[in-house]
Length: 74
Image 1 (cartoon, rainbow, N blue to C red):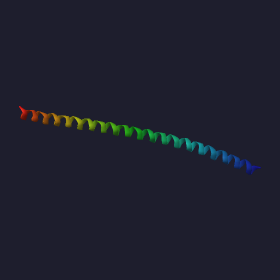
Image 2 (image 1 turned 60 degrees about the horizontal axis):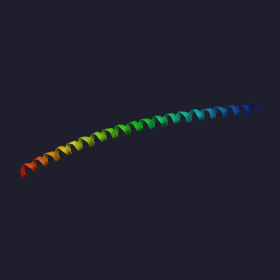
Image 3 (image 1 turned 90 degrees about the horizontal axis):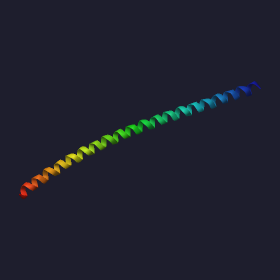
């Protein structure tokens, strides 16, 4: 009878340990997802900023070329 009680106690301990490890794993996974999302968001923000700079530079070049073209037409 003592062996059965010991085994039941050990099973309960292992089940508790599994639950605890599962909760810890879920917390770690959620933290990683949050960090990855924040990194992705920051990367997209930088990319959008670079695209905006490139667009403005392109606009300036187009304006300069138009001005040159107009100076030849006059």
